Amino acid sequence: MTVAVAARSGVWAERRRRVAELRARQGFARQLLDFYGALLGVQEAAFLEAAASPPPAADLAAYVAETVLPGIVDVGVAAGPDSLRSDLIRRFGAFEAHELVRGWMRGEEQTMVDRFLARASLGPVLEALDQDAKAQCAGPRDARHCPECGGPPQLSFSAAASDDLATGRRFLVCARCAAAWGFARMTCAGCGEDASARLSVFSEHGTTSGERGSVVRGLPTGAPAAAHPPVFPHTRIEACDTCHHYVLSIDLAIDPAAVPVVDEMAAIPLDLYARERGYTKVITNLMGF
Image (cartoon, rainbow, N blue to C red):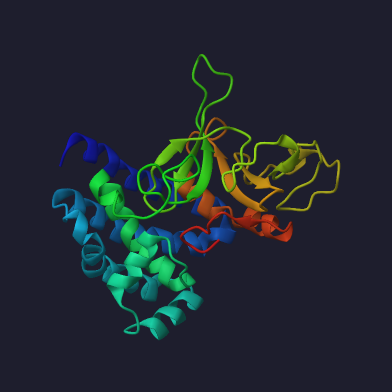
């Protein structure tokens, strides 16, 4: 294993650590986090195997369908929520595994269960492989899409500020390969809108306009935030009133222990709040939120 791959392999331990931390304090997300924790074992094994013996780039879809997807199906049936389990049982044997993976690589519309299977299977393999493999995936390589595989942004995060910056840089994270790339602040990740009047930011205790209240607990307007410590002090909704899309954003300056892909997945109440306000996520996460 190369030094670069060894360094990247540490993300699996970090994801497991964060799952355990959030599971202990966010009971509403416990079932989801338990399922994701079970998936991590299969995904890490797929990552390590692909890193040790990389498949030919042209055979990527077949490799994933044959070596990774069966394990994802097994975990889904054994540990997934009832709705997913039922869908998997109904779907079992009725799909062409190679085409299912290729559909996600091409950016095609897929049912929720098909996208879950393809995404959970392909993701760790892409994380392990180089640019030749990622080039097999379709999608624009522009500011709002992954420069490596062309995938859409799953989430936004702000890094901790360096000594010469007042605030940390903003990044987007790819829904397909988990790569991160720099992106302008106060710009919609869905359509590129950068007029501040068209961009809304909602946090657990209000909005950027100074409105008081709580997305999660429904605090009365004007209630002191200190009386109700926030569940998501480092997470906010970044929404656009032009395209009506949103992403969740994780601020690592506020919580350096956060792991953006895990924290975003566990912030279910914020997703529900955004939906109630009429916004649609740029792309739902692995768990369908």
